[in-house]
Image 1 (cartoon, helix red, strand yellow):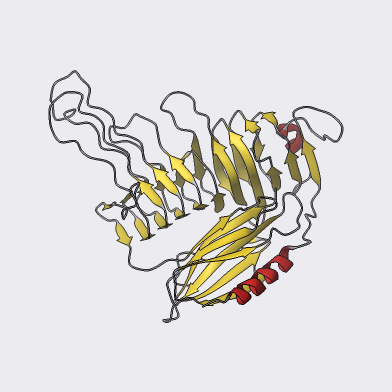
Image 2 (image 1 turned 180 degrees about the horizontal axis):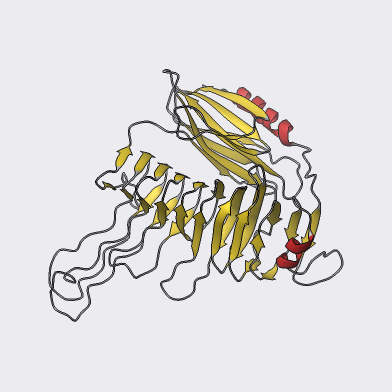
Length: 403
């Protein structure tokens, strides 16, 4: 078990590894009100002019949507930065990194054919094109998309690798009698959810006219929190996964409703650990013919509290099987290094590795001060768990973006 002195030593090592790290890229100020010290009055014009790898410091204001096709870091403010039309990310290179942090998005967001590592941090989706229509984040044929503290959208993922930490995904749309999933995973996607909330949409009501025919005798069942289609793989750890409510029996047929949707509906493969429904009960999972679920193996997890909050200590809540050997990996670059036999590989460059020992408890916390860093600097962390049998599993990675 870690002593407080050992935790203090580890925290000091982690802080030293990051302190003084300065962004080497050029930084440009974007403000929708031109004035002294302002380089551009729109994100669009900035992206057309700045070099690859630049940092855009976006001040409070209202901005048009934009398209990102090369390496760049775009950092807004804790509040007051609004993007009113769709954002698109595409292209890039396998060793490139795109970071978008601290925006309120009033239009959709699409990622297609992105070879970069894409970090989406502290984004809030608030817009839609009409009543009961979701704000949607779509990811198509993209190699490495990492979401942290993204709130509000329905997510559709196809043929992509996506991980999400501390996100909330919500489906509200209508149009399918049995509702829509908050997270729809298609194709050969690998999706890793950690400490996320996913809530499916409500099923449609049975109409009040048309009689009690079999086709409309019931209110529709609710959509699942997560829908894993054939060939797709989901890992969900310590999430709240909620099926949508069933629709109402407007026909007055007095037949039993189809019931709420499942937490997870699996046509492909799912690895699940410590997930609950909205009442804190174990998640209800539905396996469709051909699907497979594993719920028996404890899976590691990592959550960052106060990430990027000036003046507050960063707290890493880490969890793994009691008695397992834990390590924390901290790096300044994302990687994607597979581990034979493991679903999740190493996702962090090895700037610093520290042993957390073999704790008898499942959950622990490592706290250390916010380092001195430049706006737009990003560092990454991940937990490894090695069981007595020698089997190693990796947690999600978390990205900390300097405000």
